[in-house]
Image (cartoon, protein in one colour):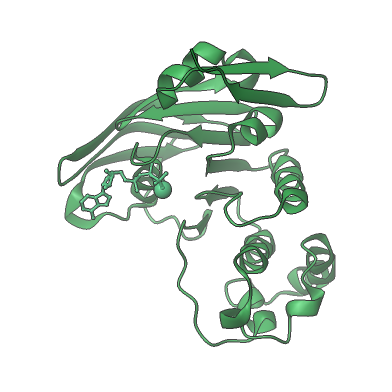
Length: 238
Ligand SMILES: Nc1ncnc2c1ncn2[C@@H]1O[C@H](COP(=O)(O)OP(=O)(O)OP(=O)(O)O)[C@@H](O)[C@H]1O
Ligand SMILES: [Mg+2]
């Protein structure tokens, strides 16, 4: 259980003020318009933010969360690239134990990246790089996974594959990811947190989120329909 008792940041005219938000095991998705504070929230939870970070009271299983590197994997929205072979990049942040090495083949298969291992990460396409970064996180195998915009850059197939991977990880880990693809979020998410101008509503069970809540969050009229294994959301102009 990861609980934000209070997280407050102030950057320019924008302030984020979050209180009493608790994430449990499962896929916890943060939705919100551009500039609503999704990235700021994730970075604030990690303790990044310098002078902008005014308050950070977070507990992990009841103990104050200080240093996070042993607990959390983080994939930021923008990640700089440098000249390194994909295979080396992949294991750069993982532990060198035997179990990790044994899991590597399975992870390389799952993320469809075997053909990329000999190439420099500078040369990869946006979605190929994203898959390598997610594979790196899978290898790290930490109990909390935080990803800023999981679906960014991924083709349709890999968007679904990635959400299935998160769903699997969510059985034993706390997964927190921001997204823009609300249909995917509603289909795969266990909880949804709606962020608007630095304030959070939720986490709400995904099954309970309404069209009205989504419409209000994005300031556009939306209709959501739930099907057996999927959710569709469309814009309904007046
Ligand atoms: N270093 C900074 N200085 C001043 N303002 C900042 C800084 N970083 C972010 N902001 C502002 O804070 C607000 C929230 O930014 P944030 O990146 O968290 O939004 P977001 O919800 O992740 O948006 P997006 O969907 O576009 O990624 C925005 O208005 C942004 O312009
Ligand atoms: Mg962002």
